[in-house]
Image (cartoon, rainbow, N blue to C red; front, side, top):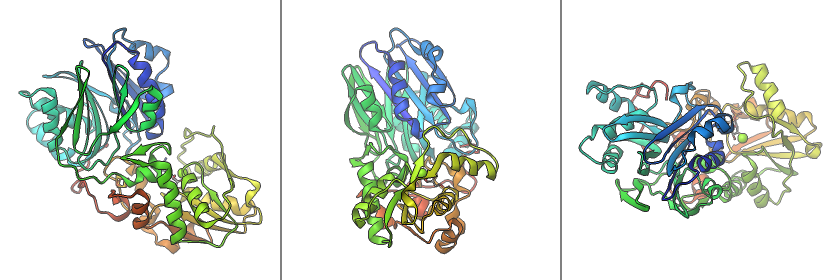
Length: 454
Ligand code: 5GP
Ligand code: SF4
Ligand code: MG
């Protein structure tokens, strides 16, 4: 998911700014979008299923355009296990003993289920199946504490990987779990502050980058001042998959540029798994950075052997294998660059293996002599409990098959994955690699303890 928050000293077109920011974060979630805006008195929410521009037409934006608007938060939702339900869209708003609260988050609380059970026992009621509501209830339970302190208390109880933006009618808060699994950055506006999942959202709003929110830190804007509380000691293990695939290539997270990290992964990949070939071809768009690095390190030419139709979109999700194949053919097709050549095909990851299988076949049909598949991450063998789609991961090819079996399935002449060490070197610090090695730095839910739909 993508999260965003804006706070301004003066009245501002908060909805317009949030709309722009959401467009810059669209890649982090295409299931649903929403925003909440306040002028200090009213708090208005609009949210629905769909892409940002489908949800926010002029009618919806007009409803959010309070003339004296000063703050707001926004969210793009990434699909998780079938919870494609309208009432699960964010921001979530509640009336509590702290007034109206709106909250949006990216990631998951791994202890949401036991916390929710405890809250239910204590008499809380839940309207959604998201773990967002667990956090709101934890905050509301601290009836004797002001919002900032109550939020800090909730942070101490929650485990997992999450970045959260939260507001009442006056205050905007943002926080990151103590492992900093999901990104979150701070930007400065002429009249206030912005919090966003990734820096490109700041740039689009005209905000200057200030810094990343630190793992375990709670930040908030009050009377125009940015304040901070280090609630928990930081133990940084940010998600490696942000740099491998998820974040925008023009993002810089915790001081490490995504594009440069991808190029380094490609260079590492060549060192670990060179191939005798004539050219390097990226699987667009996600394989481009690593292909650049592989080409640079190998000295082989980088060629665009695959064309990606920018209009194919992702709306064509179809239930049958036949339709999925049609979708792949619509999306990617070979160019003349590959005929008669030995190709190193570079992609960022293999999930189900279906894309790779089709692309290899397409390249061979287009006359490629050999196809050597190189993947700039290790085999994905475990589920992510920190906010990357686990539904798809149920069908993980690498959970079932070994390297040679995967190679045979996708029909490549050779196949290699980047090692965990290679990923770590390319990013240059401690990272979460749990979906590759099963070691969960921010904990994992007990068996059967994941919230049913989150
Ligand atoms: P596969 O065909 O192996 O299932 O998918 C591999 C492709 O999916 C890669 O090109 C990779 O960039 C992309 N991919 C990896 N993780 C995700 C994800 O979480 N969501 C989506 N939509 N694509 C992903
Ligand atoms: Fe990222 Fe994988 Fe860790 Fe999930 S398990 S946070 S996708 S590295
Ligand atoms: Mg891809």
